[in-house]
Image (cartoon, rainbow, N blue to C red; front, side):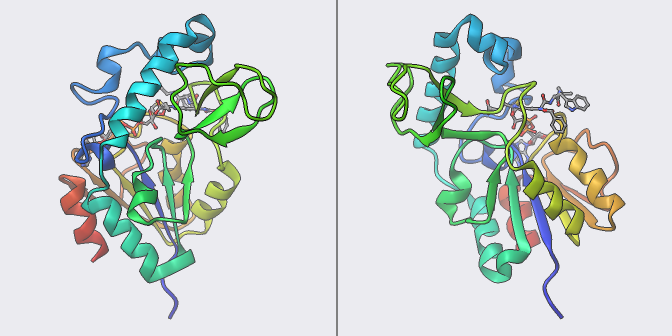
Length: 227
Ligand code: BJW
């Protein structure tokens, strides 16, 4: 019998124990920053320096973080089931890939990528954007963080939706279920017959109940679920 097809959706909670701030928890990123100012295209147009500073600081925080036991467990799972697994992350950090995951979609973009607002090219960018480096393709100083803000289209939606419709097991890890379209995937997976599992510090705002909801820290719950 072949292994089940699994989609794992991750959110900020999986990186919390690596020391990376979440958004909506107490002390999270939305406590000290207004969403409209730092996570919308309009906010960027109003004050690009503020937004670039916000993302450069997060890039520095992630550089000193390390993948934790939950990221490592998902990489082990990929080693065991190969292309039967797709990890869909809402996170812009690179802790999944540093743990060894390769079948991975960053639906909300990546901190280590820049997007040129003039020519539209997306490129890996290890430099901070505060110095306004020119675009390597068109030469304009119009690079922005390659992340998906409210009102923008997330990345990889076709691939994600195909995988969600076809999966046997859908697992949501460390996400509040507050942001769409990611928050809608559990309902879609359930409607197409998947078993749904939630691994989260506390019950989320999920649109539909999970078949199996376990509460606790990701570094405990995820290895226990995988192994
Ligand atoms: C632990 C833990 C531990 C802690 N162990 N757990 C339908 C209905 C209503 C509105 C909309 C809708 N469709 C679209 C919208 C509008 C909007 C939206 O969702 N608004 C809501 C506020 C309602 N969505 C959009 O605009 C999206 N685009 C879009 O829809 O395009 C059009 C479209 C049309 C048709 C089809 C498809 C698309 C874009 C959303 C972009 C979100 N961007 C951000 C910023 C990205 C860059 C950055 O990182 O700065 O993405 S916002 C922010 O929220 C970030 C995150 O990825 C996202 C989700 O947050 P996450 O990961 O869930 O974190 P938290 O903090 O909320 O939760 C952490 C959880 O972990 C908690 O539950 C803790 O308990 C838990 N936890 N420690 C385990 N140790």
